[in-house]
Image 1 (cartoon, helix red, strand yellow):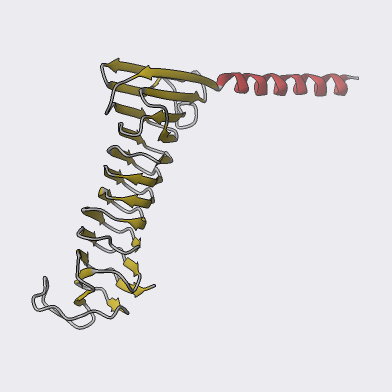
Image 2: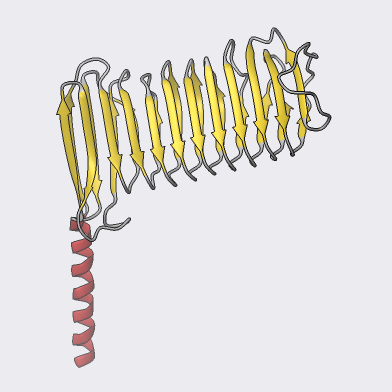
Length: 283
């Protein structure tokens, strides 16, 4: 009898804890009316942030708090919206986690930051800035805007960006670009790998730089670009049929650099690494 009672008490305590945990997770919805070209900022020290297009003139933010150790602050000043997590005493990466789902007008300028992420943005046409420490970043299906991404170690994936001004910086995170074109596409990484799969557009400047990371570019036969590649201590490999250039950006060195053009050389592509490998591949 005593064993049965003890089991019942333990079960009751466990159920109570589960109910309390469920109640601790709360959902908060914020709605703002804005004009054209709104400026929206969302900052979460811990948690994921996703941004998608919504209705014109409306910004909607849905925040999911994991516990009472965090609060959500919001501020609207005209066309500027600021939403952020406010951590209370004793909060850690779990109890202080706040996840955000954000919908904005297509033309909104958006800034999001989270240390842990992940951070995602898709389907937008305004300027985007995404920053995180170890947060993974995924940007896809955007056009006609500036895209700025900064991480320390988080991986970065950018897919289907057209007519974009893209600037990416990461200390050690890998950067993968697929079907990304625009007047400027610039990637800087210390030890992360840079991968590009696309045709380099028409009339853009593409600049990929790493210290110890590798650079891979996979290009179709109908690409039109002026290529310059150089690795101080690493190797370079080229399987693309390039036409020789009269003037080279770097001094030619067998196995360390290659130069040449394909098509009408509409875009300029520069790839540099101190000790990583650089590969230009024909799709």
